[in-house]
Length: 286
Length: 314
Image 1 (cartoon, rainbow over the protein chains, first blue to last red):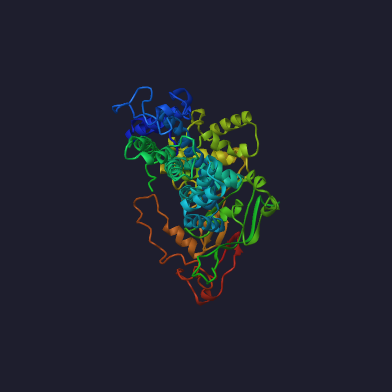
Image 2 (cartoon, one colour):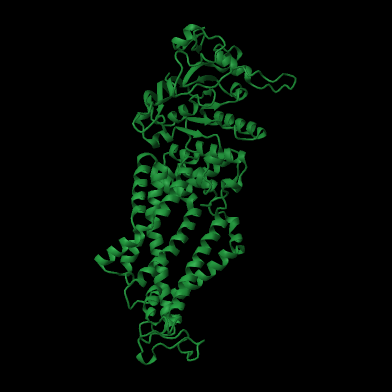
């Protein structure tokens, strides 16, 4: 179990799925970062004269709106580009929040063992017994939907995989002599967990992080589609699919475009995760 | 003169495996009333089969394990009264397997410098001390930025030794320091340990399976069996004329480097008893060639004869 060994980085570029997935993720991230510069129009600007213009590859398409406009005359490409911001923001924030919770619990459980482990496993079992979607629905119904609520709810619900993976890896590491040596030299338990054990868990953590990020994007899209996620008029991809469902028979492209965007980004993130798994720790397979 | 390290009637227990949900776990006595002392500059060897409590004793000395009874005193102060950091300045370990005792994600510099960092030595001075210590154990500045997987087994063990010595402790506990190394490297590491002992006036507790190593290096030797010391005394005297049947068996089981000698006889039949169900009387009696009725009933005490202490009814 080596962490990021230097000599492995060149392999990362030769790994096909990692390169492809990483390329797409990077492209989407750039688009999201530079959204105001890249987007041809204001994503909120309604133009009722230009409603439901189809994309350029259809007969009535025009280059002013390459991906057409929606039912309120808003430029579809601009909304798609700005929507990438929301998806990526959710992915990062949820990944970070759930990663912190899961890693913390997993480290403590794996390192201390005993009753700490039992307590963490108890919390974990309870968490796994909770129906995630129902809880999200309930919270949104009580508090109301917003980006912050979605991030907090998903962040506090999706830490289970982090906890499981980190726990078992930390258990293995905690039995090695370097942990004993550090403690014989007077390291505190906290220092041992964070400075000695954690660096050796980077590989599995990165892999779980990608899985959870892809997962968060999908759930946000699903929630927004149900009208329980990011409230309109924000340009979320899930919300775009939701708003397009009235037009599914006459303007199916309205659903295809954000749908393909979600699919591509999630696929790309998963490819990155698969690639990282091969490159970082060939021996670590779930 | 008070010895550097003094162990008195030490008892260490591990919680045993629970038989069932309601049945209470019966603790396993890993160490059962061990007394031992290490003088300044002395090398004391602990010898015994796997599972006899050597490593548990080492952990207790390092303060990594809380003894159930008895006392360990360092320079007259009980370990229990010292903080972790105080203890870590005086008594430190070198582990058996340098592949496991060095963190794979750290550089040599940060591994060796860790004890200094924990004691808040400023970065510049730290660098200087780490360099000097690497030279001392036979490594060079080139190795500072390396990670353990870029080093050979012998180099790793040198790093582990450097880490143990960097705080200039008085006592180093070496748990089988050479048994995971190639034979050709073992001698180098042992020579290094002895050279450092002279230079830094160290004491060692040397845990080893290798009787030849023990005979060469140790001033005194303690033979352990099943959580007790069965024979203890000056190394030369103990090996010249082992008294306890277990020591005799160990001695005769050692391989001789002379190829004309036949393979040693297995000596002892049977296995180490199950610690969860210890035998009555002398723990060695089921395997002892000279076992008498008395051995099955009465646990022998350590008795000193001519400077050698033996726990046997014979």
